[in-house]
Image 1 (cartoon, rainbow, N blue to C red):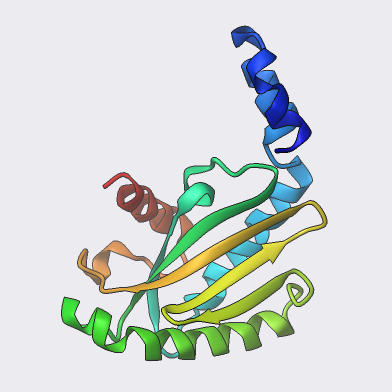
Image 2 (cartoon, rainbow, N blue to C red):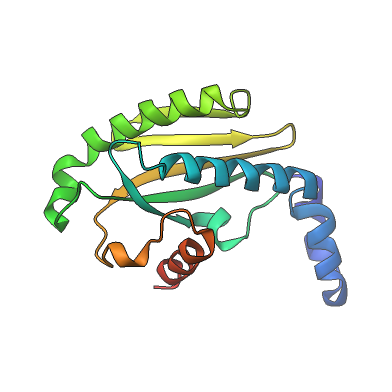
Length: 172
């Protein structure tokens, strides 16, 4: 446990908000940089010339719930692919689609300003993206999913529309 966590039990209830902000939440500049990196990753994934085409991205885990703690934390990126025409395709094609997506994402991000702030690690089920700054690291598990909500839920390029779907999915 870090210094902040060990002191939590001695903090009066009326000072909990201050304590969380001071000792547990990520530094504001780190959080801003991580947010920019995640937005860049989502934008790269949804570029129309990418294959396989990602119709939308839902963000979950601690990052998606905005409960990230200082230091190391987690997140989930659920990618909704146009190639998955039915639910059964999700399991059948998942690994191949995620392998292609991970390779293309790695290439695209390496050529952008993120090259020193991310790692992609392949796993049996797909891949993990780690984004990091000097004081913060967030590991995102990347999952493929069939878009049961239909293509009308995702509006390419309009983050406000994309956020609404992310929120709806996180609250299910």
